[in-house]
Image (cartoon, rainbow, N blue to C red; front, side, top):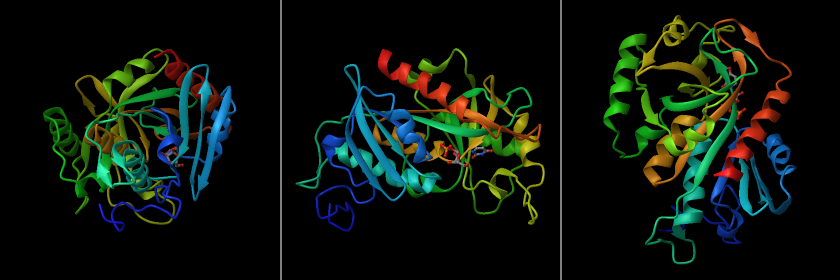
Length: 288
Ligand code: R1P
Ligand code: URA
């Protein structure tokens, strides 16, 4: 892999994350907000690496014998393309020879985020676990990856149900890791997550500009697939699940609900909900 494709800095670290292979654990928590990283690593017994570059802040440490990395991705699926490719390179490419390693070294990645609920019945302050993500973005269209039957069926039924008519943007559904989902059953709403490529128009927020699809959120709010309802909007899970499963890593997303789009509510003080979610994720990673 030439230097233009696998980009390393002068210290040999991957270009955007600034990390060396030994600085990441097998268990990784990704968060959007760089300020959330220290909130999580403050709960570690010890922190052995702290690396910070642009919006990508990484802390790796231990809780008991469990080595865990927490890493901020910043906002959006475009950043997830960078994060997933560079994390995978750290694990599965020999950065000295620039060759893929013979044996796959899988990662377990849990995204711990915030989201907006798409059901009146999911209150702000509660938690959602994403069984599928529907990408309303384009990242996975640039990769030649195959989709599973259920993913193709979900995409088709979703597009029919909402009467999708945004030219040039084709939604795509991707399943998350069943193994990691199993950690987040009790106390979590389960459902399908819409990954938007923006916070305002792409999530149906109308400030001063008209929307291309006026009633998209109402249509999404009563969509179901195999007993799973459309649950929420956020901005990273489609590329996380898509690149994760294509590269051989286990990924899921759990979010604190800070907005309810059907009830027009926003939870301004959402830190207590995030604190509870941090405890749940750390418990999952230290007991499995
Ligand atoms: C938008 O405000 C951001 O919040 C959500 C969205 O996915 C997007 O990144 O997640 P985080 O709180 O993890 O950033
Ligand atoms: N994050 C989002 O992407 N949307 C919301 O409504 C809230 C958090």
